[in-house]
Image (tube, rainbow, N blue to C red; front, top):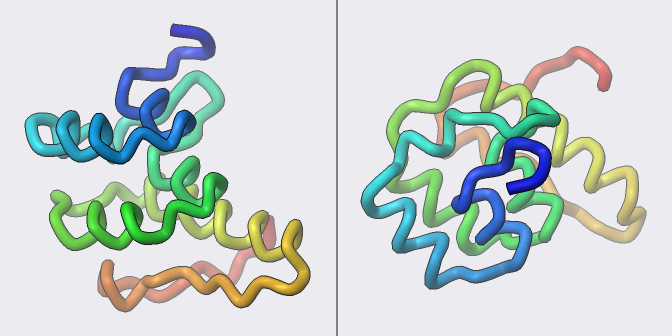
Length: 104
């Protein structure tokens, strides 16, 4: 698979919710594995604006690594800059963590 992406990230990029749920059911730890660009699966969910599946995965996941959380924060920040009319916010109440204040 190009750029070190696993099948889970490819399913996210292609918006295949059935495959995303199937892979996640057996391999929830994949949320903490980045691709060759250093991006984690949740980053791509935000980029694809798949917020429903994002919330689903956050509700049924193992604890996220600090790097995965940082990448998720970055994705929300980038998405908000791209979509000026958007009011997307990072659901950190689900993870129990406060958003980072460092700029991206």
